[in-house]
Amino acid sequence: EAGWAIEYQSCAWDDCLRELEAGRLDLLGAIAFAPERTAVFDFTRESVITEWGQIHAAPGSGIESILDLDGRRIAVLREDRHYHNLRQLIDQFGLSCRFMETADYQEVLALVDQRKYDAGLVSQFFGLHHEGRYQVKITPIVISPQKLYFAAPKGRHRDVLERIDQDLQRLKNDKASGYYQALDRWFGIQARSFPHRSIFWALGAALTLLVAFLALSMLLKSRIRAKTRELHANNTAIEEEIEQRKEVAKRLRESEEQYRSLIENIQDGVFVIQDGRFMYVNEAFARMTGYLETELIGTAYAELVAPEDRAMVNEHHRSRLAG
Image (tube, rainbow, N blue to C red; front, side):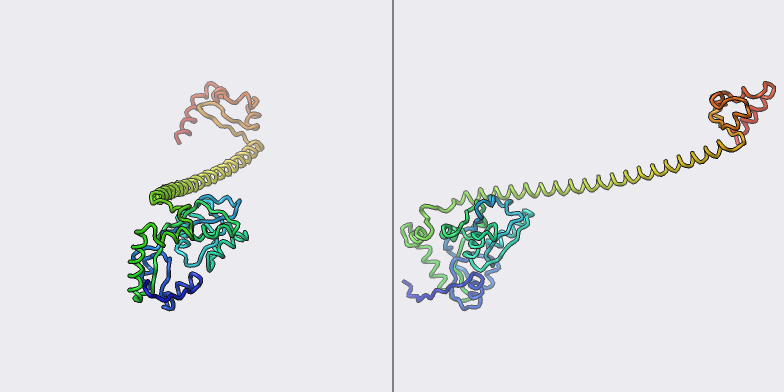
């Protein structure tokens, strides 16, 4: 209708982007808009279609949610916006994955089909169109719904982009147009309708709540770990203090045993008086008095002193206590 002569060129996605940026391609269809891409590309204002990334997994892998990707091997398309957004999501959830970058979506699904990788991320359109060719299953994990546009090298073919905008708007306003017929033919749009916008909002809200819950859980875990470290440090300090006290008590017992052995074996009489009564006497002192050690313990020392000398002995004892 526009009189254009179009030559289609097949290339790997990252090669397509480089060729478009270098001006060796005039137009690239179905590319996601990103602010950083506006530095090298011009985009149509009207989107071609809305699509999203979807995780396809090996049957029996048990992958049903984003959390199930932790520790898994995931095949992805190099330079894919869905891949970029998945990495951000993985980081937000604090997960760890091993990514394998490929040149095209076919290789992504082939790696999963061959069980070399646990899961693969592809456009949902590609997955719908090729799911029968590979032994993989579609999971509920949806990544970054986004609109796709036509793009041209920066500053070139603005007139072509404007004509595409006009035609897209006209075709999308007519439900019987070739635009919708093509969608139905290639993607089964009638049988597999796109998720309603409310579903995206619900998914976004659920994801936000889940991220908030995980963030809170991580914060609580961090605080618990910090408190545990603090308690462990306190316990360690207490254990060290207990060990030190045990060591001191052991040394005191050893010293006491040494002094007791010394006192018990000397020939001089040794005694300890408290409140006027014998609290301890050694064997030598007991022999001097003619009493047994057990008889002397608790006895008033004055009972061993002649009555006429008790006043003098008591006074001498008080003066010794006074220093």
